[in-house]
Image (cartoon, rainbow, N blue to C red):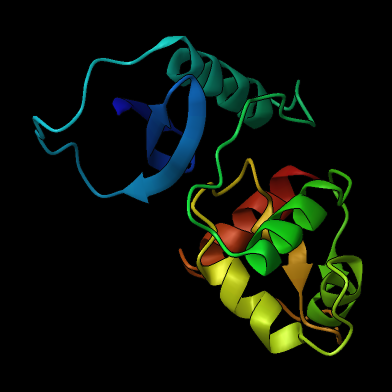
Length: 152
């Protein structure tokens, strides 16, 4: 696996790729040395470039090869549904459940969002409570609000 740390306005983002596909994008507190990773590949650099454009508001869609690894079919359906939510828009957990093909599975949708391995690129921050309140985000509601405000 390859790794690149991108210092973004959101914080330090760890980009992990494998076999020329993005497998993980996570916020990290600090750069830790880890010999398990190889130097960044082209996809890691392209991910950092597209993230830079996103934070500069010159990119609204990501165009990256993604690997969902060992995710369940339901998780993959949720994550692909998240990718169809237009930039600057939000949906409720129940709407996302419907988009993923399981109308009543809004709690499972929340769990899939919590386990999203590719934050921002798979925009789980665009999923909000039915009443419009911000609800649940792995990195905290301040970070969720930051991303939603960026997209307005």
